[in-house]
Image (cartoon, rainbow, N blue to C red; front, side, top):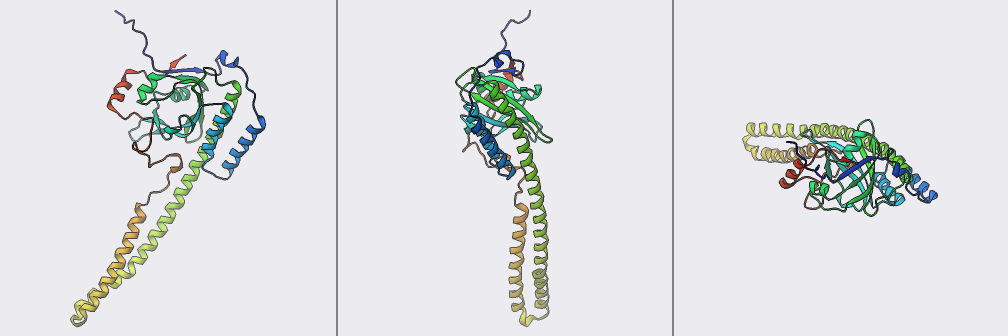
Length: 305
């Protein structure tokens, strides 16, 4: 006998933006074109001058010019165990407290967007937040734009908590441009971090070689002093005192060498805050056994409206 139970409510409703006829009929917005151009120029300047804040300025612009309650950039990452998730590397507006939070790749509107590789309209309601184990306002209208570069993949999103038709086609066009900008900017930051890693590694090797040479001199002096102390018993105390001083020099230099090897190198640190902790930051993450049990109840992807 077949079951006639209704499908489980996932709390995610995603549909193709470009194929949605009702979206094209939404009321057009009046924009301040000069302000929008000025903002894009500021973004271009931040990018050209290598300023790290360009990613934050980008999502700030999405909020300011699209009338969104929140906007952000989600970056696809792979964990050590092979699982994948999205990390919110930049957020503006109502979801700002979830900066550096993560959501699972296989149960996320962002994941559906990447699978389709097309811009999506979406809504999110309480069942999805229950799955994540967080409390947040419903997303009544949202746009997701996929972006990709040679090494990284993610989405740019903008959401409203107040209206079922908050965004228009003009908003989509601006967000699409910002998504392309985000892809280039994040790729640029990644290359900068790699170059910084290489430069720091080279500097560390040079410093280690220099310290090794500095250790060699007092070490030889210490060895000679101990040899002379054994040969000349009358002056043994003087030689041992000299050896003790050289040993302190060696100990100090070895300590510097050990500190050098323990210094963390900046591997893409600007896109991830490694010092975050559950005690001082609220993150969108599955962390409890009860939430894990909820996860098994839901299908892998969003309801396609």
